[in-house]
Length: 223
Ligand code: IYR
Image (tube, rainbow, N blue to C red):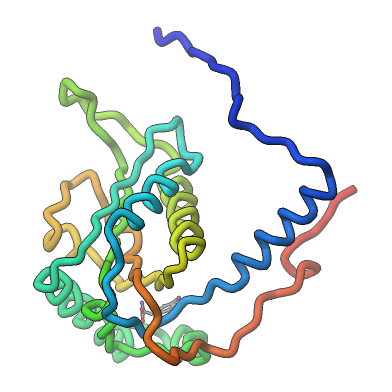
């Protein structure tokens, strides 16, 4: 039996209501500036910034604190080239055969296609893996819980952290992306969850003219 051990939550910070309101508004103003970009500069980004953002991602709430994620940060041009080739192979299939017309119609406003040059241009690709189970020090398997929820939340933290640091991201989801296990040598207990493209936007980058739903559409208050 494991004894739960508790410590004071001394890091919790309370603010006067006016300050809370200001902080809520400031965070909204900051996060609403985030846009997915699909055209990246090849300008390098210092690795320590990525490391700090990954530490932020690793603080995400998750099932039984088993932290069922692994982040592979790729900057090696040869590996990026292999990932691009494999992703474009799947994307060609997707855009020309697999995707139903309804899906292609939904993607229309984003202007995406099977060409993914950003997979080589951007300084970093972060392949995010979800671990369905882990291992104890003695090698025994440990089942993980709420894996997609946990990895989704950590990914959200990572995107927010990178944006906050002043970097652009693209959540890329070639499907299927089993090729990432092979190229990156990841074990059987890990499935690729998402490929995050990270760097500076290309000069004069343009983004789709899209809008976000208003509060009344995304939220209901029961009171
Ligand atoms: N994975 C493809 C298609 C795609 C699907 C959705 I849903 C998007 O929001 C964007 C793209 C691609 O990356 O092009």
